[in-house]
Image (cartoon, rainbow, N blue to C red):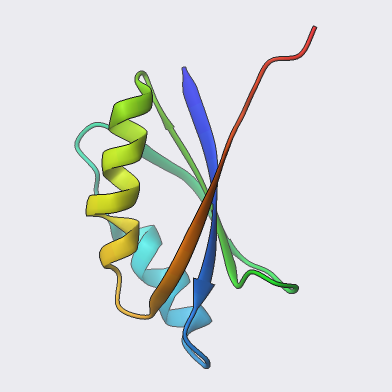
Length: 82
C-alpha cells in the first residue's frame, strides 16, 4: 500500500473551501483517508492511499491540484523504517 501526505497551500481565505473540495473528490484508484486544515506554512494536509504510486500521483495532479483555490502542493511519501 502506498500512502502519501499532500501538503497544500491555498489562496488567501480559501483554506476551508480547499479542504472541503479535497474531501469531496472521489478518485477511482486512490482513497482520501483524511483531510485537515492546519496552521503553519501549509493550509491543508490530505492523506491519500492506493495500491500503486502512479495512482497516487494521478489523484494529486488530476484531482487535488484541480480544486479551486489550490496554489501549490508538496507530496511526502510514507516510508517503512526498520
